[in-house]
Image 1: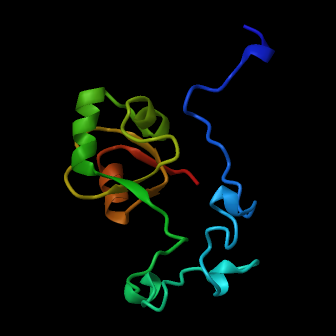
Image 2: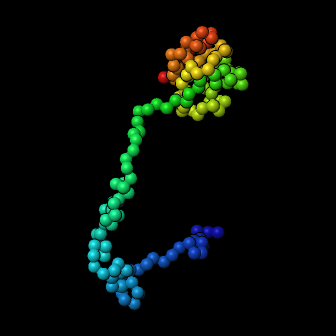
Length: 149
């Protein structure tokens, strides 16, 4: 096979419609644009979102809610969950790396620890955020907390 032998697959290409090339072509005269009016003339451009007089969809549909671009999304772990994870995976350190390696979070997730449940194991924490109650519960269990920015 050489470059000069290459051809497109059968049926994949179509001939261009040659508009305005005489009456014999069947597409002369008005060039398939009908008679008169803005759409038959050169330079016609319809306005964006114009629906021919019908109320446009962006005006028909009501506006709802608010999206805060500055919100920080955390993956939340409660102390009860952490106790189960320590038993299951044998964590001595509850860090982002350990969680990522075990498939519990993705690489870019931020982790927050909350105080729901009870922590029995002595675990050191390296996370993005901790609630005050969770921090005191961790320290009474003999663990330590380090906040990562």
